[in-house]
Image (cartoon, rainbow, N blue to C red; front, side, top):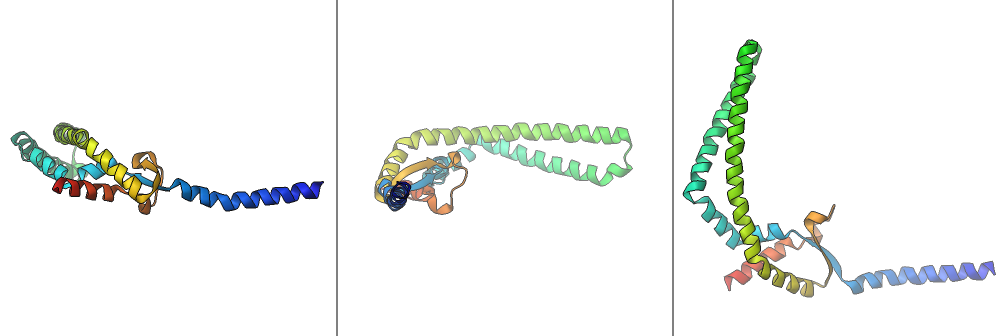
Length: 176
């Protein structure tokens, strides 16, 4: 009786081992996509971001950022060079100046990032229907059985990513 059960288990395991790859193929392949990256790398998105970057408010904030960055770097370099010969009061004063400049720099950086993020969010919403259409086409043509958002995946080899294909198809559809 034990021999029959053992043989049945071996047969069942063999059948399962032979069927699993077939089941996996029937379900399609697995792919990952970074939709935000795919959209923001399109020619249309780059053009829209360039428009934002060419606005006078953005340009003035960028000029202020560059100026503050240079001042911050100079203060930091001077402090690092002279700290050993400075009195405690001079060191404290220099650190306060550095912190103040860093705070100003962070504020301007936030304004620049906010402008770009707002434009990016508008692009994501505007292009969402087209992205869904492109994804449906790719899923069908590539035989994808499982598509995951790249940000939800811990690891995926580059071969699993269809992000560049999505960007290419979006560029092609915009050119029509």
